[in-house]
Amino acid sequence: MNPVRHITARDNPLLKELRKLGSDSVAYRKLGRVWVEGEHLCSAAIARGVTPRIAVFSDAGWERAAPELRDAAPDTVRLPDALFSSISALDSPSDMGFVMDLPLATRMLAGVNTVLLDRVQDAGNVGSILRSASAFGVRQVLALRGTAALCSPKVLRAGMGAHFGLHLVEGLEPHDLDAWDVPLVVTSSHQGVVLHEARLPNPCAWVFGHEGQGVAPQWQARATLAVRIAQPGGEESLNVAAAAAICLHAASIEA
Image 1 (cartoon, rainbow, N blue to C red):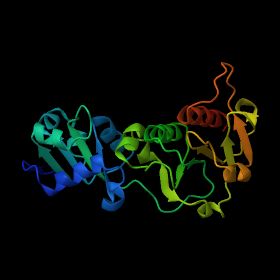
Image 2 (image 1 turned 180 degrees about the vertical axis):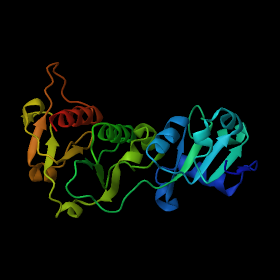
Image 3 (image 1 turned 90 degrees about the vertical axis):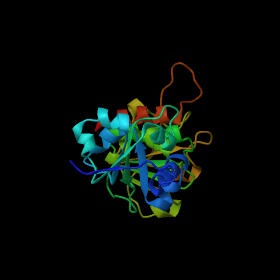
């Protein structure tokens, strides 16, 4: 078992950093690491073969933790329960968390099934799309500038561990994809081939757009294929995360 550090001072530098990572949506960009809280996210990271830098437990959490969680990191910290609550950004604080290296890449992968996020701004939607992408075998998610920060606390929680199984690149500009040769598939509420009748390219990149404005015209113009989801109930449109789940599931079946 790794040695355990006990921290009892509220103004400890590590705890100050964890509070910032848990409350500031873009602090990870400056600090170069993320804070994931709760047994589910921590277990998901371990299941993906990710080794955390630091494991942090409340006293109660330490007593309940499974051995694989206690031994997950080379540096293990234990806090009084009240002190752990002071660093938590959750309404109902958990009792453990991991400090992890930033799960972002700097370069795009060529020739793999991809999701391209075009200014999707709601953190819950972004996290949900990442989760669907991971579930349905997508290898890579690219985020154009204007999309919610991929490693913000809210996106991490909504992703439920998907970050650790995906190749993620954020902050891209449209010109960064000029030489990228993966066919684009765009979605629309009112035009295009009905999804269940479409012949999808493989690999391809699904483009999911802004919650109100949809996919930008420049991506529609560049697309190899436009699809729409049949809605016999007559709704005007679907939430972007729901639409992404339907499209990615359909693509996984066809593949």
